[in-house]
Image (cartoon, rainbow, N blue to C red; front, side, top):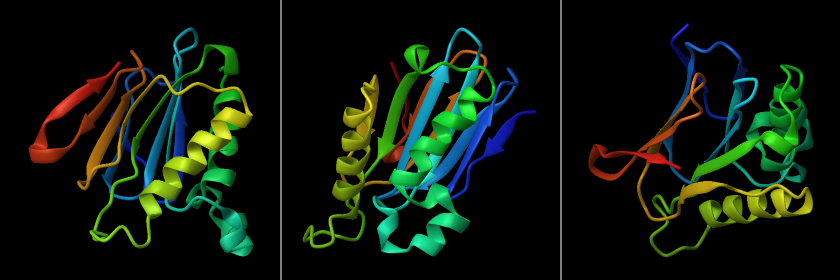
Length: 161
């Protein structure tokens, strides 16, 4: 119990109230946190790229690497622990412009577009977000309460409500 680290291209879910799901150094990547307050089930995904068609073999090995494979897996993994879509609270962070001052690659922007498109197609609302800009973030999801904390620029920590 305690910190459960979600690596890059990874996801974790929990129903253990003492757990904190945490992922570090979100740049252009996106963290998607979902939480069902009734059953206290939460999940956190740290995906790198918007679309698994870039590398379908990699997507099979590491579905958390891509938005279109990681997001459905995140929800399904939470459902297995008793969560229900209609009760899920959804928060996102990341999608920054890191080392892309000319906005040439726009990976962060593409990642944000992908998550919004997937949620829109599936009638899922994003309840809160801390996205864009040009700095890294670390996020924590507290399973006992559903609090979603984002540590960003200058080490400041804020709760997304």
